[in-house]
Image 1: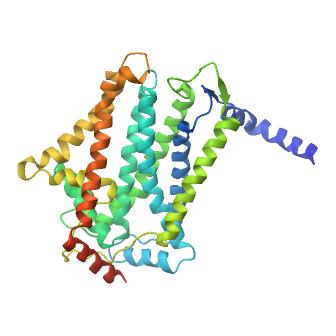
Image 2 (image 1 turned 180 degrees about the horizontal axis):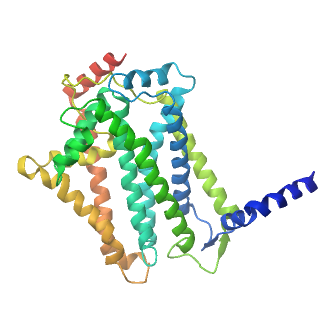
Image 3 (image 1 turned 90 degrees about the horizontal axis):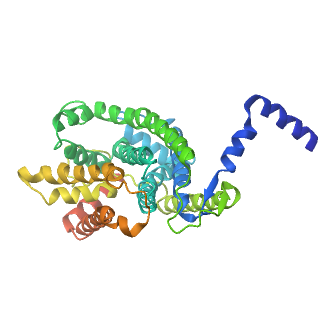
Length: 367
């Protein structure tokens, strides 16, 4: 049996050189040794694959039009075998990607992995973060329920306050009214444009990561070198299984993903974005009238410019954390601000009797 396996392996290796590929993947040197801090990239890759697989499965039963979208989601949730499970994994997988990207961003910043010669990979990581938020933005309205519909109106309304915002909003909406053309455009972005762009960026990101290697921790003994397999590989697998277990538990708890009643443009539903856009929504509420532009464009724009410029501002070769703290302070302060604004937004809604009554009414309508 082993002789036959060896001959088959030799036959395949002659044609596809799989042994060389496996050697490159499994024997990658990890300077400073394997660490749990390095698991975020592998976890994100696993989630990306999970989102692609579950997204394709959902597409087989989804009908993207204002007349049929909500009903097709109900059919997936209640009548398609395993549909609620696939939908729940896709929904909570998106939320996990947003959280994990944030954690990965901080790990890279703390380790100084944005420094020369890794600047381009840092910028690619920021682009991947923006695209993941784009997935969330374009995916939520596809269920065409009250929450997804009105959250889309809030989010496109924020886009409308930006430079050339009216044109951007009209391009996304497909005109003056939110309807089937809006849904078709969001669907095309979600299942064609963004996956193609994200897949390409992931490949380039991984190629550059393999070129430059893992950035060791500042206090790591760089004389110690582990191969990726088995120690780091086992850590990555354990973390991936933990991620999938959490997503699966959340899916079981909610029996899929939440679904409000069908979208009703004539209703007085109190619009709210998803929790990962709640900070921007709360920031917008702090500015009124002509100053609204500050909350929706100026402050978020400055945050984005800071992240883009960080490798250009921090050119010293040392990756020691203490000397870099002044440059990293805006990152930590911004993160605390986002968390604080998100909690304020969620707490405000939790204690808003009128909002809770409207949500309960929407739930009864959904039933």
